[in-house]
Image 1 (cartoon, helix red, strand yellow):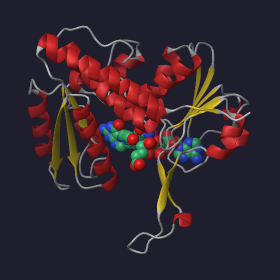
Image 2 (tube, rainbow, N blue to C red):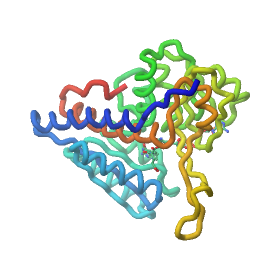
Image 3 (cartoon, rainbow, N blue to C red):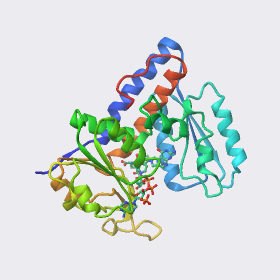
Length: 305
Ligand SMILES: NC(=O)C1=CN([C@@H]2O[C@H](COP(=O)(O)OP(=O)(O)OC[C@H]3O[C@@H](n4cnc5c(N)ncnc54)[C@H](OP(=O)(O)O)[C@@H]3O)[C@@H](O)[C@H]2O)C=CC1
Ligand SMILES: Nc1nc(=O)c2c([nH]1)NC[C@@H]1CN(c3ccc(C(=O)N[C@@H](CCC(=O)O)C(=O)O)cc3)C=[N+]21
């Protein structure tokens, strides 16, 4: 049986509609417009694409978008000063510092300088601790988007075996916390895991967040399992021909081999059009949530974990 393809792009559009409706209400009833500030240091081309997409979608749902583009050689002190200004700006409800940062900047220090209440990425140690102890927090956007799709597909996740491949602070670890919060039996696999194939074969839910193109083959997937593919990998696609500069054209693939995995899975997210669009939609959702909390107002329903 061919798997159901989980339409992340469509789901994300629904999330954005809910966000837009809540933003409209905040404006009408409270005279407040939520604002999201994105800070980009340097000129990484992939980061520029994401930041542009975030800015566009932020304004489309009726929120204010503020972009701060800083030179690649910006000093730590100057970056901290920008963040401090945003922390104290009442028109800014969410702050996102685009990662990765240039090597000379201390990523942990920068992340922890964002006011936790405005940390719409959910990366601040305070939010990490709140999530880990089951308290109300800002939840990282990518895992939140994955959780929303899983809940929508399964209803309850209680008692299911979930395997998360990858243990990064931005995807793997918070994903595992959220699945545990929904009463899955959670295994976190990583580069030192023995017999990864065996571990994955036991999973009712597989979340792949590794960063290795198509590394999960279909024969690792238990019949009927749900596969969430977080990976975004650009690979050469000679079948598409050459670019103007003579180099080979590229295409995006995930961390799972979509063709063989979709033969065994019950449901699977595609790349592109799966987790990626949900990540940005959840960023907007977190910004509205942060704005409501900052103003002591009721939060939108169904947009948090
Ligand atoms: N769709 C979206 O919105 C987003 C997509 N991404 C994508 O998700 C992927 C993962 O991102 P991120 O978490 O930041 O990546 P990291 O590089 O921070 O982490 C990768 C993880 O994969 C593990 N790993 C590496 N090789 C193997 C292997 N052979 N077998 C098992 N585990 C392995 C690493 O293990 P170890 O810890 O032992 O080194 C590590 O824990 C990337 O493709 C990224 O582009 C990321 C964020 C958002
Ligand atoms: N502070 C911070 N927070 C992040 O959330 C963050 C970050 N830094 N750095 C980079 C990663 C990556 N990330 C993606 C967001 C959207 C898509 C996305 O929309 N992808 C489209 C395709 C886009 C394309 O065509 O290139 C899709 O999968 O359909 C992908 C990846 C957020 N990240």
